[in-house]
Image (cartoon, rainbow, N blue to C red; front, top):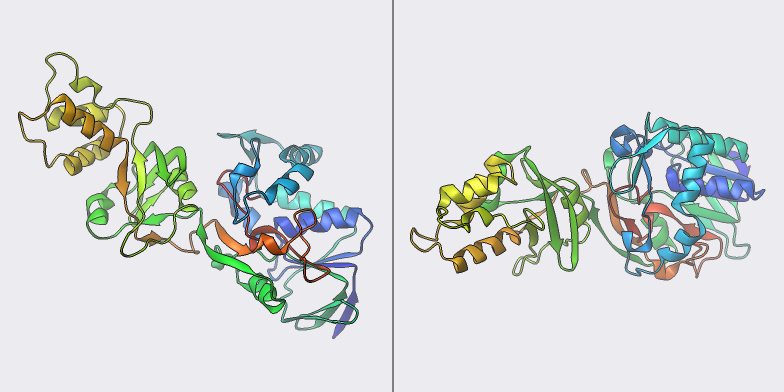
Length: 387
């Protein structure tokens, strides 16, 4: 077995692990990163459609979910989106703002991986690839950690777990980080897929499945949370940025009282205003024509067909129009589930923040053990917040 000794060992060569390595290396520590894949930053490479949505100009604590909503404040104050933008600019990587403060590389996500690897090299960090960890031990007397792989043994006083969550298993995601947490009796908040498409079943699926590929700008709400972005119909249900955002707040439904999401098909507009002008026609055809001005034609027709089993001819009163307008601005879907970790961009839940220091990410009960990144119960919104 090859024996190695470092000051800090980081498990995971993704964005969180590499950034931790860079910062620790700059402080003069001897750092090693173990990555089980054959190349670092695999998830970075597929982010942002291959262009890496590397941060968001409007990053703030309210963009993150956690059992402790205040936990992210300290980290966000210590290292801001502006700090990473300066790093990108120092490496002369061209970038642009897409929408809502989202920053993307003009070229390829590989540029961000190259940036991180160059910074690691400059900080003296050693990155070991194709290194699958088989066991982690801790010496109770010295507090040192020993990490075993097939052919190597690493001994360190500080161990950082940056192994990611359960999302996108085809990229190599596993529950390894949670296993380490359980090994050391660190509490874990229940995990679930987040930023993930939602599925429909039964009559709802039958009524909308043939609209696959149709999208519309909407506001989607679940409880007190709402997001105004595009929604997309898929062959299995609902997707698009608005749905991915709200999915993080939608929980698997209670079979007795399933939780709906509410869709406003045209935020801030009176869809049926053309039916209210003097002498206007008031019938399903007129309602469809009014909706088509704001919503794709097939979707507009489907909504009218869904909502207008009535009123019958002659009952198109102002009160009936008010009720129809209200339903168009709070149209309920009841998802049957999500498309799971295979399609989830991130994992919600994870290592409980109650067990970690908000300043250092060190475990309160196990000196020298740290958890960072997606394995921790802090999950960002869509749009560059998780990077």
